[in-house]
Length: 253
Image (tube, rainbow, N blue to C red; front, side):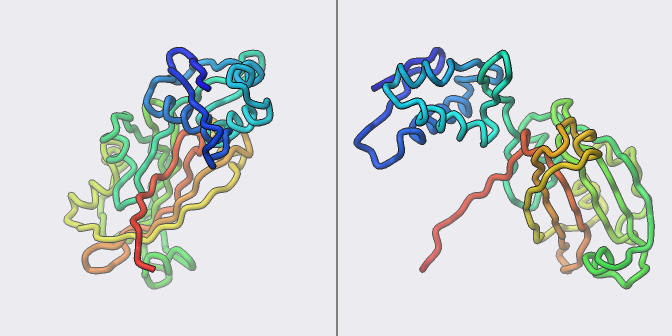
């Protein structure tokens, strides 16, 4: 049976398929959203009507819609109904800067430098940078925007000797990795950990999210071609507007 929602086109469900019906519907809606056939702000019919048109049970249709809500592709608004959410920025998990990734995808990156200082590295920070306790480190805190909206809070620690004269003006014009490359540093590898947690009140206010909103977290240590740690970063991203994308290759058992 097919359901047509202009400008979506038909939604097809195959009852003989082992793929659950809710997932068949959700996948086709997701493809329409990702392709732009259902642009941000498009309002969908209510779940009861959609279920009736497809000949599905209401719990099945509700589950399909909730799947897309959980993934951030749909939003439910009281008094309005279910709408297509604003598109997320998908970032490949590779050794690149957020600035470069945003620029390549036409997201118009901008940076507000919240603080830039030089201070002694102690404890965990000294260990992460491979510095003796008390050695000088540059500490950067920035708010990164994409197309005029706050997207991420970036906090970086770097050995002070690597980047003498770092300025807020330079950081507002380009990405940190470009500044490092311009200083003769060749980035070769990184180790990073991706996680998630709820936003504190201060973080939510900074990123334009409600308190407790989901955040993606990334911790990264970047190395140069001499295997020195040149950057240690701890960043948070709005999960409603951002995701990491990984490409996996089959290995040998």
